[in-house]
Length: 635
Image (cartoon, rainbow, N blue to C red):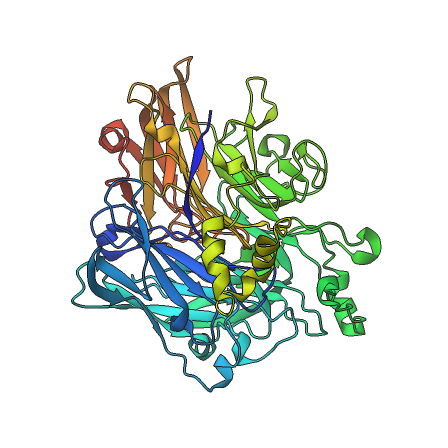
């Protein structure tokens, strides 16, 4: 049984994001990226949420930062702080600062906007989408990057730029030792503003293998003729970036993985989205007829096809290594929504899981030769119905985690339908089965709804809650509740006990913090774990591109020796725009597992293989506060 119980806040505030402060490598910042309070009503009024651990020297999640979309960035920041020190805690609303202590009005500002009213940058509210918080410029301090939408693909100019907020040290703080400072103009000043785009999220990895984090934009096609595709930016250091248009794509989801099975996660797998100008039936917008130039561009980029890129060191460019596809021959197909990598077949190589609206395609490494790519007919397909049947699910996001710490990972599908979310796991016959009815509040369709106690008071303030108009009208008339849907999922151990929890957000509804209650079991029944965090020194600081293998004995009922596989595919952000991730790597050990060996295959440019043995691992078992921190060896 996997029991996920909800700790509510009254309203959903978007998607979730998780991060870590590198100050002495002691502070972990668990972030939740949120999209909008009421996304269905507003393409220009959303929220960004980020949880910040502000207690130095621990791994404890302390606060949740949320920013609604307003013209000036800092005018929208709100912080929810956990006051009690137990694992669940009491969450209270604050302002745009981080409370230094509960019950103490003394606060510290952590977000500093450089935006000014009355400029082209602040003509419209900021349309926040995917967010990443990581050290972009390599100075050892966290930065914040926010992708922004394009006003349904019709707005252009500085008001629709992406946002960068550089991390700066802040002296004199008791708990917070940095601030985030910047805005839309700051992004333009450094050439990372992704102009005129419908930005969805940004992928950060060291594609050119120089130790610095590069960027690839995930953009959605506009509803006009503007061809604002996603492209790559190589980090040249000193906050300078070089544009690389050899990668020019509209992609709905992407992941860095060992696609060619050479032992190194260096290939960027991109699932192509719709390339031609889009319409919007809800808004009454008809897609314009594409120009000849746009048709030519999209001919080699049909929706639903796969593009796999790898850095070519000789040419110093990204190279398309996957077969060519054309719209004339293959046509446009359904686009994938999300991807994840894992080792499903036990060969200690990366398999690829690709989520569509009503199925998951799985490409197994054991069914391919070295050099073959995960394209074409999948090796396994998990199928369901998105609108009918016993458990309809329109799949939006895919996550993978070992929810019960038994050493086997489960797949979690966030569905648009409230309470429709799916958990898939292998049974003893190695078949995929869906968990229903024993996963607590995750599959309860009533939990995400706005609580009546909030509506009874909140609906009296309609001028302040314009996005609740449909809910208030239904509430006052006693009619059926308006449609709502899930809009973000982060899988993260937010109570710091080793068991992965979840944060769910909705377009209109509750922000659900789902606590995994398996951690409440008596010690005799609890499963053990080993938590690991990588610290790159030669390569990028987060170890993006690394492969981590844990060998343990006495695993499971048969007391076997097993090896678990993880790829570090990203830092902070997910493979889609529906949330973000916990950067700590957690290996489940079951009741009796004993870790024997941890092997880290560090990414380029170092490419060192590092091995830690049992005497270095055992003291870190079952510790999140003092988890195993592994520093990359010097070259």
